[in-house]
Image 1 (cartoon, rainbow, N blue to C red):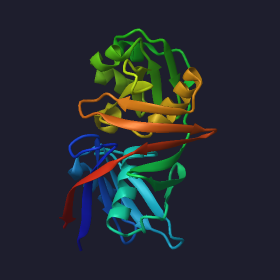
Image 2: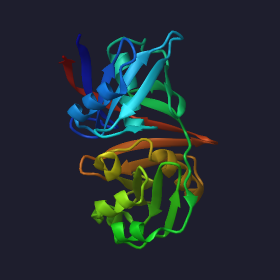
Image 3: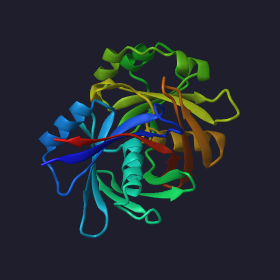
Length: 263
């Protein structure tokens, strides 16, 4: 048997920017071992596996090169993009994904894609010594949700200059650490970076699910519900965030850069 696999740059306006995701559309569910092996072979932050359901929706699972994760924004955006681009789903129809984090929907909005995700606010906590040591920066806020630590630092240059001790981040036994600050540029409200070495991703280029924590944090702080974000990794990417109660609508563009036959 063979399957078609795609590589899509998500939260990207052009190829070779944003966050690359693998997308594999299956006829029926595959074994976890096989999906993990494919994700390791793709060796991008996440590879998504999409399986049609009888109700018109899709089962969606995400794997890093080393583990399965409970929520992934950029690979969800990439999956919806592929479904519409390949006409598996009509372009005017919403994509409905059944996931470990509940039902997620995506729809086209002009030349971008919007996704309805659960809000994942971080609850303020004292930063453990390993977190402070890993970042080597003064923290003005530290909080944790079910997946990650979220910390705010002084300013955008601090976010951009951080070179974390990845081994100490692994000691924290969370998916990853989100570092954020208010943006220096008027084009954005806030900037961030995301480090997840324990999940096999030292630094993720653009992390949709991290914005499920970032958006409610900055919405509260800036007293606004529509936010423009930039993830300041080497590749970089733009994310729009609309906060609506316990949901966050994330937006961005996607570009397919690879279509191959998986033997």
